[in-house]
Image (cartoon, rainbow, N blue to C red):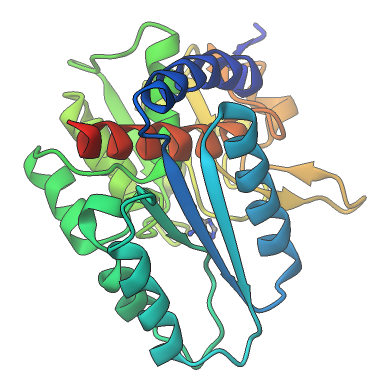
Length: 284
Ligand code: GUN
C-alpha cells in the first residue's frame, strides 16, 4: 500500500487565494489588513522565516512592517515597541519571531501583545480561549494541520483516536486541544513515552511534532492511518526531513504529509488567515 499525499503547497495556494480576495475587499473599504513582524538578533533560521512571512503578506495584499533589531535590544525597548503597535490602528497582527535573545523573557513579551492582535496564538488568553472553545486566535501550525485533515474530509473526528507526539506550547498542546474540539479521542505522548508504538498503533490520526528524525517508523503505524509530520530536521546528507520515516511509513499509512511541502507552507498560510480575521473583526 502506498499512502496518498496531503499536499501543503496546493492547499496553501487555495487558502491564500481566498485570503487575497478577503484582503482586497477590506482594502476597498480603506481597511487594508496589516501585520507587524519583529525580529531581534540574527538567528539565520529566523531570518528566513521572517522573510517568508513578509513575502507571503506582499503576495496576498496584506500590508506588512518588518522591524529588525540588534540582539542588544533591551526587553524594555521591545515592550515599548509592542505597546506602540498594540495602539496602531493600521496593524492587526503582531508577531515576535522566536527564539528571542536570552536576556529577554519570551513569556513576558508574548503577554504584552494585545490578545486581539495575537495572530501567532501564543498569548495565554489565546490558549485559554482555545481550551474553553471561545473565539481567539489559533496557533498557526496546529491550525494548519487541522485544515489539512479537513481537506481530506476529516473535519469531524468523532469516533477517531488521534495521537500527538510532542507537547510544546507552540504545537503539541494546542494541537491536542484542536483535535479534542473536533471530537477526537486524544492521546498526548512525547519522545520519552514508554512504548510509544503501543499508543501510535491505535491511532487513526498521528501528529508527529518532536523535532527529531524517525520518531515514527512503519511498525508504529496502523494500516490506513493519517500521518501529519510537523518536524523540520536535516538528514545525514543535509537534506530537509521530518520526524517521520517517510519512505517506510508511506507504505502503511492511508495519508501522509511530505517534508518539505507539507505542514511548513500551511503555518504561514494560517498566519495570513489569522491576520485577515483580526482585520475583519476590527473593521466590523
Ligand atoms: N519560531 C518558530 N516558529 C515560530 C512561530 O510560529 N512563530 C513565531 N513567532 N516564532 C516562531
